[in-house]
Every structure is written in structure tokens, then in C-alpha cells.
Length: 111
Image 1 (cartoon, rainbow, N blue to C red):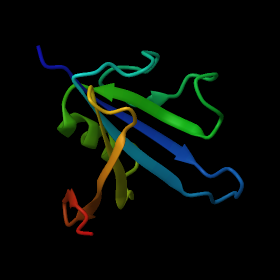
Image 2 (image 1 turned 180 degrees about the vertical axis):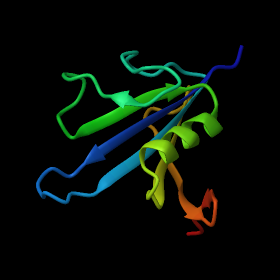
Image 3 (image 1 turned 120 degrees about the vertical axis):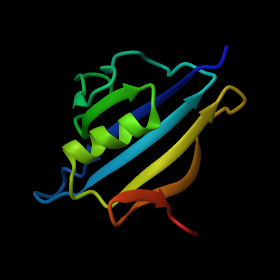
Image 4 (image 1 turned 135 degrees about the horizontal axis):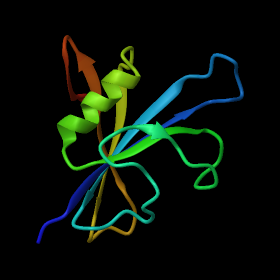
């Protein structure tokens, strides 16, 4: 049975008052995330104690489109999303091409 979860995490650089927000999506493919403390199908304030205070919002999604919709609702001005894949065969998450906003959608950034 195949399993997938799209985990969204947003962090903010708190060393500056206008610190930028970083948005990341990790696709967990045929493996479970290390911890299961995030909400499902929505972004909510990250629980304290999981990471440090830089982690702002987080959530797990069954569908990639739902993860993107949640990001757009929370961060309508977002222009870039860092992306990772984490499969059962990987020891660590692998970075893949980031997504960049193009007109009314998202597409992989050409490297």
C-alpha cells in the first residue's frame, strides 16, 4: 500500500523585525513523518516544543494541491516554496527544484 503526506512548514527569521518567511513542502513517499504532532489538512500554529520558536505554521496534507491552497491562503504574497522528497529509501530528505509563482499558479524553478 502506497503512503504519502505533504508536510508544509513555515519559518521566519526572527533576528530582524521584518524577517522573511521561508515556506517548505516535504513529500513523504512510502514513509511516515518522524513525528505526528501537526494538524491535518490545514495550516495551524506549530506546537511549541517540536522545534524552536522560528517554526510558525505547519500542517500535513494528503494532496499536493491542498497544501498549495493552504499556503496561498496563509501567504498570498509568497513567491517561492522550497521542496523536498523523503522516500523510504532515503536517509535524509532530498532537495528538489523549488516552486516559483508564475501568473496564477506554481511551477518548478528551472535551474
